[in-house]
Structure formats: C-alpha cells, structure tokens
Length: 173
Image (cartoon, rainbow, N blue to C red; front, side):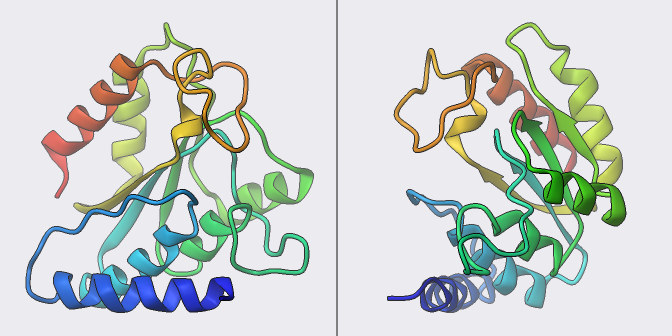
C-alpha cells in the first residue's frame, strides 16, 4: 500500500501498546516507520523529543512526489516534536535550509575516533526528558554495516553507537 497507510498502521499499533505503558521498539527496513511511532507517542507524551541517528538528514518536504518516505522521515517527525540529528554525512541544499530555518540541532558525521561523550552531551542539551530514539543503520561505518540501502563513507563504530545510546539512556526516559 501507500506509505501513509503504513504510517497509520504503525501509529495504531504503537499507540495501543504505549497507552498501556508498554515500552515499544520497532525494527524495520525503512525509516518511515518512525513517523507512525512518533505520531502515537507524541499523542501520549506531549513532551516527547526525538534522537535521530542517520547518515542522511531525511529533511526533504517531499521526495519524488511523496511526503512520506525515507528522505522525508525526519521532516515529518519535526512537524510533530523537537528533533536532534546525530551522524549526518549527506544532505541536500533543501535539507540544509530546513535545518537552518527550523534551528534543528544536527551533529554532523561521527568518525570512529570522535569524542562521542561530547556529542552526546550536546545532543542531551536539546532533548526533552522523554525521548524516542530512531536509528538508521547507515549511521554506522560501511566497513561494519554495508548492507544498507544508501551507505555513506565514514560513520560510527559499534562501540561509538552503543556509548552514545548508553549515555542518552542514562539521562533520559
């Protein structure tokens, strides 16, 4: 079906579990599923913000005529709640302008030897106390995760990614 239908189905499923106080986790092959999850969770938790880990900004308003898809997922989430991006290594001019105009905190790149504690602390400053974490595996270095649709040179190591998630998890719900 259409991406809008997928988003609605994810929203309904997540809302059902989250409204019962359940912690929800989604695994999918495409970042659009995060939009439905954030729609549901932002209804339940008005103070929600999103930590978006991706090699791509995903901030296009439309991509190939569609408002819902892998290149627009972060933009649709930004329509719902505050967003912080980490690991971005590729973006279009349109996305750069959106980031600038909407004052989206973006921490570009994440080479294997980066000081992830410093990046984590900067990200934490812009996140609310309750967050949704969305991870696109292309945030990782292609030498350890090449099986993604759009790999980008550079990126995090497993240790860097888990250190970031641990730091964020220690301070946010």
